[in-house]
Length: 429
Image (cartoon, rainbow, N blue to C red; front, side, top):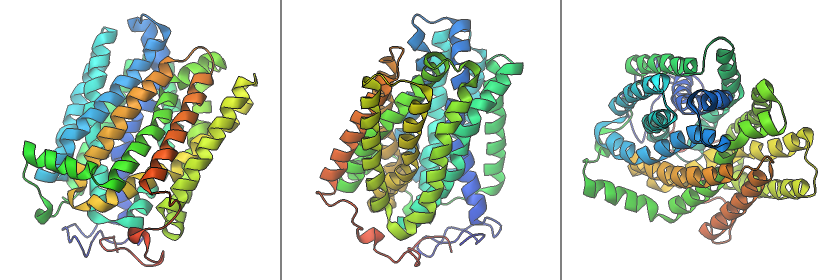
């Protein structure tokens, strides 16, 4: 499969001979990296922004992350139907243009409220990257192969949170916080050029859907009334609530509570590195073990570790080493859950991949951003609210998966029944 031209027997989308799997994965990584860079590069700058623009409460700095995530989540409702009607390429290029404009507004903001509004728009523009990256992967692959491709994307993508906070901190050594937004503009402009000249349209003409309110509602209704799609969407929302809570409060926990200051990006990178390792492991293991066996086991382990960690903190054991070990162990399991949950949710709705991807992203994102913001706002100078919130959200996700699968955990379904050595239909050769 490596280095093979991007073709598909089930969906023969025209593509230039030079568009190989490696370049596809690189493009998907770059698209999803836009989303993560706009979050993770900002983390070291939150204190600077609060001091420069002024905030009523120390926890208000978290809204720089929360508003972006909220805009990112809501806007996915639009990009799914648009990309299903007009194709993936024109929609992503238009959204990146909007991202450039919103990022410029962030860079020029003179008040905290103006910055939050610009961040909301920036997140709304970045949402197209997630929706369309997933839809492109589903256009060209399915089943375990989609999970494998998305895991390859996630493996490289996980380098972003490892490097982005350090990159943001490096920029802060030489420029004010507005320089971070200048970097984001350069990155997005480069991605636009790459997509324009290299990315083929992957949506087959037969799969285009007429744009309209009734058609869109019908597509969302179909996705959200499909048992597997709905169940794994809600489970993903619960699980990602803990992650979003971590994103919002990590800077305060590491930089202030554990007094790491400018060394905060190193601790954040340590957490993200573990997620990258497990994402790579998932891309190697999913073809043999299947999405369910890996993700169900990882969710149980995540919940158990978080419960233990909450108990350790409640017992008064609160030092950086113990915190890092337990949190890193729990967060690393994200690599075995995220891509697999998405692949399982998308499997029965491949014929409306753009709309289904938007529905998945909207529901998981809105619920997770609001619940994550609540977890973050409960920060009281300790890590107890964060870890307790992660334990509760992990347990809720497990219950939802259990109900969705009717109590049959770890079992392969029809979409996973093929031999790990045999490609699924529609995969790259």
